[in-house]
Image (tube, rainbow, N blue to C red; front, side, top):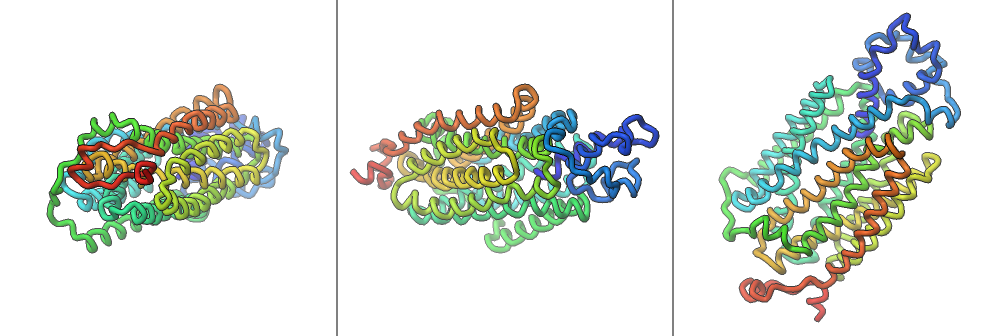
Length: 449
């Protein structure tokens, strides 16, 4: 969606301005030509502006490369598109944020497999709706429905892993593998969307993803056979009790603020590249490859190491500081190569934090509460949703008012300021009555002592 939405929304908004005889005719306005050339990323023939003639797409003036100084003033309408893209990206996380507090206790009561199958079905519907949506309202509806399915899958999936792998080392390794799936989706998503959008049109990539989601849901149903409601033998800890735990809140905060970086970059970076770097069409999708690949590497390394050596707090602390410094550096980037390097560092840092904190949240429940995990991973997913909701929502207005570099400076500074709180995760205190009842093992510094 990231490389598709800006160009699609811009093209649908600009279509009425290029009718024959209009004073803004493309052949008479080279600046608009350059803007369209850099912004209509991989438009298929079905979704090209309705009044554009076939010869216009190969007009030499459209393909002309203008100096970088002209790109920054290419089109003021890009700021409006930035706000719309932010609203679309934020809508999923906002709905997911609302659903998660109900989904956590539900999975604790009925098990993980029925919500996961329901999530796959909802994702199939939402992705198909994306394919056939041709207006901003329908895209917003599809994105919101996607949030419901995302809540089912993420909460139930992480809870299922934590429940299936009780040992700290095995849990870290299993969640590292799960984050590999997330990273692979991020690696393939943007290039896949760009290429399919260019050669086949907007509808094709979403229909293919709907088929893949249907196959995944079918495989889950065949393997786990969730035919009956599964009742947990123990009642999980209430949501409000977990929300009052300062250690769980610190862990959730680390997830939230690092996710905020990713969400903000996804929203604001493509249009920043259009306006300041004369970015080519393919660059808007492939520029996110490096952060996905480095996320994949970090999640596999630190998911295991942080649990093996009880170093989740240290990995999170260093990861947040590094991601903060790198985010501030985005404002000084001058070309595509700078962005590729910075994205790689951001992906590695966020992968380090995620793969360290997610198993830690399960460990905190084992240490301090009843080992039922749906609710605590609903909190973790709420933290992710807040990041993906706030980031796109604030990116457009802040960029329009004070600029992209200041936006990156603010987000990076927030991460650096929050990072020292991860030190408190070094030795979370035990609840003696809980240890006596469950025989749970101490964690972190308490385990060493």
